[in-house]
Image: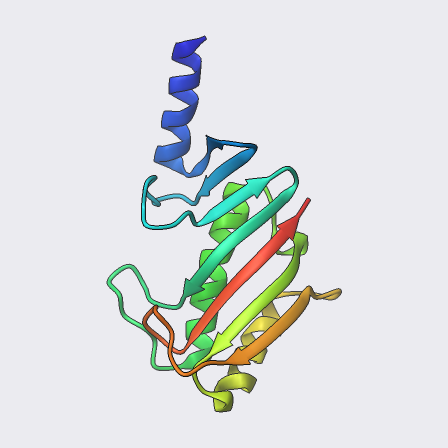
Length: 145
């Protein structure tokens, strides 16, 4: 039994997936993410998945010059967490978008509406003076199976 649990956790950590952290919470790690980081990419509690705020930087820390491309990269990161939890964008029920410039709203909205199909999740969009992630946009989501 112990070998089976160790094997399952090893597979989850190598290929993305889940690692139970106790208290009914399961850490969701997309492929390539390492356990034990500064934050969990996703936490699954019962049938609800809480996805941490994601920025548009690539693996090298670079942010695209085009805001729409930046948002597409963010949505790809969110999609990876959803996939690791066995969910899709259709399961997303709530989205929070943080912009550093109100003038980028339309570009963000173009990428957002291309990704989320009707009925789209609820959304709150706010303009902030600065983000702790590189870039101009941060998005957090909640999904439910």
